[in-house]
Length: 139
Image (cartoon, rainbow, N blue to C red; front, side, top):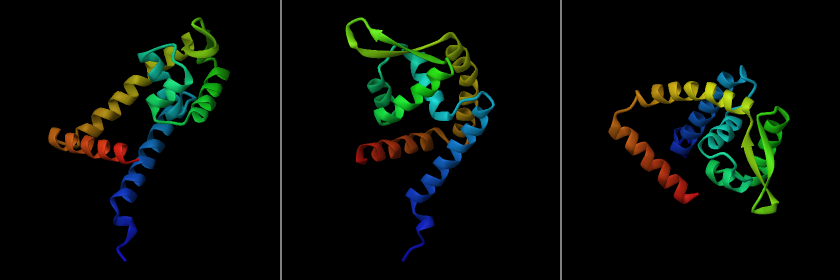
């Protein structure tokens, strides 16, 4: 049997966990996790989304996003408000505190993204993106 640690899926999983750990360590000084930051970033792009839309955008399950939003709401980073078009539905909005934090975190994320991209040629970046598309279509 081939050594499983040489499997591409194993190596990609290790790399993903290391990236997650790196960002969590960097963001912990701000009192937030990587995944929580993605909620803030998504709301920066389009404030007032519902949990289902956020879940789709982040490729997460709705219950997981609900938990993330709950924690962000306790920290006064986001707030839920009734949707005027559907009183049964709630939308999630950034608070001023959440917006300020997201604005602080974006340069951290951009810096590391640039660092990662600098390790690859544009062709290699395109190949990685194609690989990720294949993975996303298969899963």
